[in-house]
Image (cartoon, rainbow, N blue to C red; front, side, top):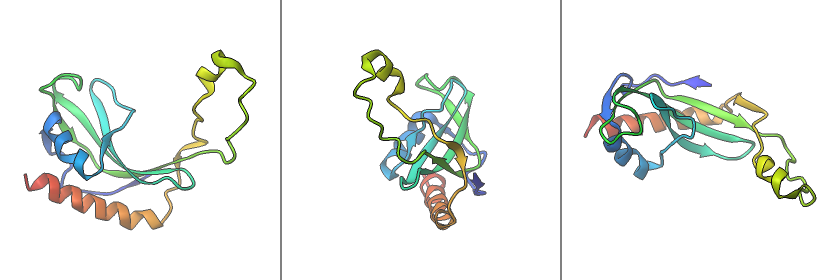
Length: 136
């Protein structure tokens, strides 16, 4: 994980409006959210794992599943999920019940080393994020 300091840290937005601003430029709400916190993810690359710019947020007024929730943004960071090579096993004989639990591979390293080539990309994405959010 590599943190990227940003002018958006501490800024507050209505979650619905924030989502409307970020989705068109490639962000999605990451699957790792709860009622009081979450993150927007921008997938940078999917070679040799998944590499993201993640923008964390926390609810400061309401809960994330309500229409009028206000959130505060945290410090963006680069994150890599590294998966085991060769996980395309033949699961044709495991049956439907077992397949329902084994269909997705877990990352070998959920906090893998971020390749240096993505650091400049992450900094550029943070600049775009600042332009998008601080000028609306």
